[in-house]
Amino acid sequence: MKKNEIIKIYGTDYTAMTVRLLKAAGLADHIRQKAGPEKDPLIGIKPNLVSPVPAMYGATTHPEIVEGIILYLKENGYQKIMICEGSWVGDKTEDAFEYCGFCSLADRYGITLLDTQKDTSFSVKGGNLSLKICSCVRQIDFLINVPVLKGHCQTHVTCALKNMKGLIPNSEKRRFHALGLHDPIAALNSCIHQDFIVVDNICGDPDFEDGGNPLVQNNILAALDPVLTDAYACRVLDRPQEKVRYIGLSEAFGIGSADLTKLVLTSLDPSGSPSRFEAAFPSPAADSCAFLTHKAMELNYATEEIQSCSACYSALTDALNRLDQEGLLKILTERLHVRFCIGQGYKGLSSPELSRLSPEDLPVGIGNCTCAFTKNIPGCPPSGDAIYEYLKALI
Ligand code: SF4
Image 1 (tube, rainbow, N blue to C red):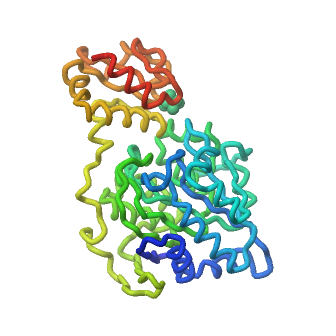
Image 2: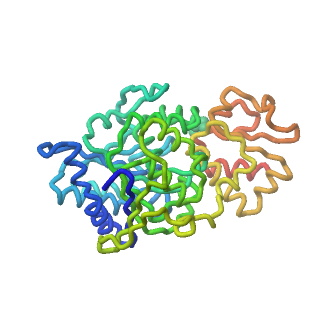
Image 3: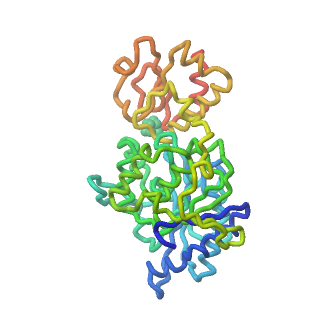
């Protein structure tokens, strides 16, 4: 396949679909081109296992897709395969490997699982930033990225480019959030080349990276260009591409093209034959989720966020969702004027210093970064339960 192509397959037998998709995309040719015909390359597979939540909830990569990739690779003579991932700050990758079905997958096929939270790292320069990257990236000869196409409460969309964040140490993940995510994500992608992309668009949550509201789409995509893939993801999720700044920044780094007018989109029928060539880009109605509400954003109308980590923001959103369902969120925000302050930008600030809030507002600090607040919920990150109980007790 060419760099301006995306190939798509629909169905419910995810393992068989993946094998057919990879045959149509000629993955083995791409590996041979990069590694050379003689070499037995180490192939790295990078899923998205943000937290220990099974794929059916819309946050993590389906193990069936990774199984399809492994079967295809073995059929083509590739035996050195490693699955590498690091969950977000606050969760352990080993739990995610276990609960998401990757331990049994690794046992079944004799595959190495590498927890990047425990890996060493090296420093590189990406644009103006000095970045730390996990050492496994240097060992891998060919990297297959397997992101989930889903929404994100801070960057709006997460797919191929942002999934590389699992290949940096936890301390660096925190720093990325402090830097506003977009610039460091683009810089990171200028340092890590993803050789092939298999997108899990089976039931990604269009709203939120930690899942909970999966939207069944039952398709898997193959692509070579992560910038084009993410531009297409914006279209699928009906988010303006300009809002996902790391796409344009990555394009400026020369990582790929976000020009969807050049996209050649091919759909395969379930047998793997091209059934539909979509030379022109499909209309938004055909592929978009425009009808969806952006629930995480709606719930966080009273949240004052400055550089928060995803796990912290996710825990808060989970608590707000529960309070909303019980009719308590409006009591907190409208009657008590509670404002939820979250993020690394509040470090060292106490609540009276918050000039952005009005005098009648009652700031509640979420997490250790707001430990100087009069009202603070400790933890790094605090659990959704702890936030929920604390806020409920205010009423
Ligand atoms: S308290 Fe929350 S925002 Fe602060 S470092 Fe911990 S997880 Fe990140």
